[in-house]
View 1 (cartoon, rainbow, N blue to C red):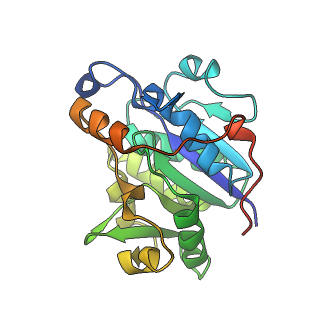
View 2: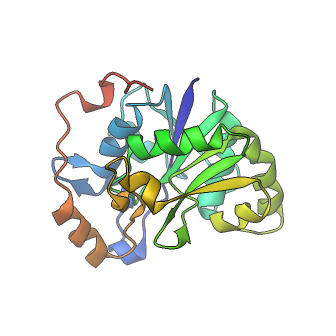
View 3: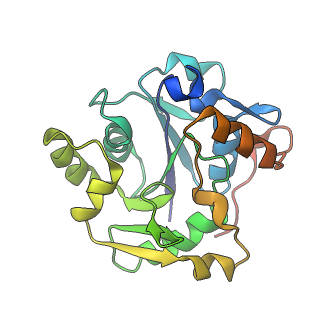
Length: 214
């Protein structure tokens, strides 16, 4: 079954010295290039939802779809609505642009859980549920739209409106998956710290690698 990858890429952030998280360098590439590379291991389509598409045209190849938010200024929820609405495939793997360690292997585990009759499957790490790095049914767009019209901006608010299943730490650890795939940075200090940890160097042509076997 086909899968869409969705990256929620916001604009410049004062907490990051006015920089855009998705375009900050990790190793020898902007973070978003590495995220696309990881997503294309299992996704037949990757979408970047952003309020400023022009900034990404020079960074991403033509095989990556770049879309704008329908609801501007509504944070991740605005991007989720746009991405879910325009996704070509039924399942959508949604991540934030500030997450350096996203994992295709973790996404496949979550997808298997989601396919058991839930609208979403989300990682439960350290006792906390992470709406981003979750696998969603694209039909969740209707729930997101209702919340947006009520002024809700937080992705966690969606969990009160859908039927979802969590996947605990042990399920990932048993498969040899490090739990840092849910980590994200929100300050310059956190960015610098995670950049030092980032030691995955994809091969040249990283965003055109063949899909991981499902």
